[in-house]
Image (cartoon, rainbow, N blue to C red; front, side, top):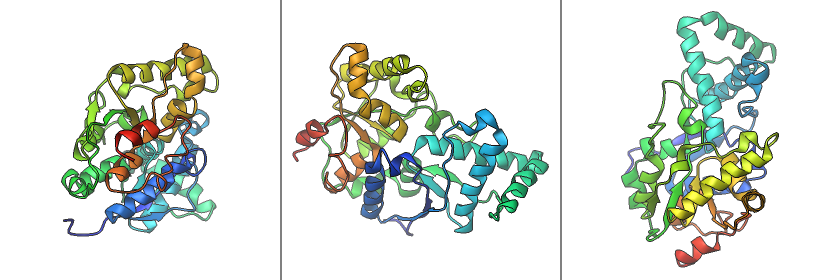
Length: 301
């Protein structure tokens, strides 16, 4: 048993409050099932998903220094279920912590801009962590396994890590960016079988989708086909942007590659919460574009 209750400043991000609302639902349900307290940062701003720095690195750093400062005010780590948000905010945190030692004038400039807007200053005394790694490092695989009420036996799960989770930071990495095992270890802890395939650490194609749609869909289609050929019953992702390209656009992807896929794409907290006895309805599994019924039927729902 955990010796203390885990508590985090929760940064849901934009997509989980809109197009992937089921991600927010399932994160809240999972945290409740595990006894984790989430304090939502309702005043937080969009991280920019990597686009702010195309215009100004200072803009990206200032916006996200403010987001981090909101967590610092609570004296809590900032947690997010979006690998893009974790990658962007985490890299800002890493850069500003380095600047505190090597270029304090830059941090002063960021805090000067925050002060002009009446915002709290960035202090650099907390951490930014993805839900996946909080579950492994802070909660523990053994503790999660002990809470399983419905082992996901015979369910073959293919992880799709995406870009930012593995390569958003230069030094403060949580996993091997070329051969990660965090999600596969979670799968094993809840009774599922990990499926390995080439595309699990590659880009889903989402960043290309606004200006190179065909290429984006070909990338997504390749990954989904590889997972199917490796024997996957579903793909599980820790990033809602990856989920959008792999799930909500899967019908369009099928038209581009000329092949039916129909592979369910689950959010990581949905999968874990199922094993903890949370109902599919509470997890929003009826909200996906690609039906999750094959997964649920295999699990006996």
